[in-house]
Amino acid sequence: MKSSQVIALGIVIALVLWISSGYIINGSSATPATQAQQEREILMKVRVKTFNIENVTSVVFVQGQLEPWRTVTLRAETAGTVDQVNVEIGTRVKKGDVLVNISMDDREVKLARARAQLAQNRADLEAAERLFGKKMQSENSVRAARANVAVAEAELAAIKLEIERTSVRAPFDGVVEERSAELGSLLERGDSVVTVVDDSRLKATAQVPQQSIGSLSLGQSVKISLITGEQVNGTLTFISRLADEATRSYRIEVEVPNTELELVSGLSAVLEIPTSESEGHFLSPSLLTLHDDGRLGVMAVNESSQAVFYPLTIIRSEDGGVWVAGLPQQVRLVTFGQGFIQSGERVIPVDEASTINNSDS
Image (cartoon, rainbow, N blue to C red; front, side, top):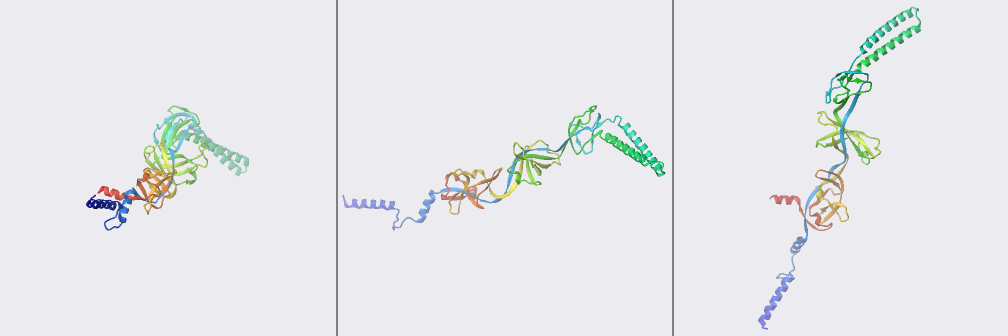
């Protein structure tokens, strides 16, 4: 082989060795900047967002329904024929309004007789007292005359009450829900006449589980979501002291104002009852992940750009997310890419806000 060919082959071999060794012309090694660049290229980029702790109220949710505040079925307190009906079903009435009249029959005659008897007995008493003063009448005679007056007064009061009971009156403001009596009906004492419902306020009733009953207190505010989509607020007015034997739950009642008479009883409702105050973070369910051991939690990134798994406890859920406990006061959570990293792994965190701003620009 010619010497020139040997020299050329040596130059080629030297050039290949130089390129593969990573050395530059002056013989120095690869720069730290190059190594960092290579490391960044193999690290996973994840999107992160900072979350801060907030105050959160723990809530008990129970199914219930609206009921009238009070309902009464008025019954005949005296016998007789209905001779006047003043209301129909759905009529709004005021306290004291006459709803149905029962015929007087001979009650007016009995009233006149009772009044006359009382007047006579009072006159007899006056005469007996005068004669007793003149010692012409015994004391027993005066006592008998006084007893006769008392009996006559009682009989007069009884017939007046009997006459008063011929008018069936509304016991409170409300609406006529049912009417059993018709014009000409013959009523006996105790027969149903009219049912009146007080709907100026309602009550939401529900059964609360025994594990939650101890955190409730009378007078606290309750949020009520109706099946119609309406939401109203009420006040807890009753907590049963006895559990239902079948369900071991406790009945509660919540007073609901209805001054505009817009609400109707019978509607299904969800009662939201606050129980205690605590601290937590409000997260989207999409941020939650399962650890290899089955624990529910989230992936976060610490100050050293390492992925950290935090197990969580769910405080409550609501529209749009869940309130959780178990996180530091301020934490950077992985919002995209959490399914591709492991706890302890180094990552490249990219702030979500900057990502959004860059996309906007």
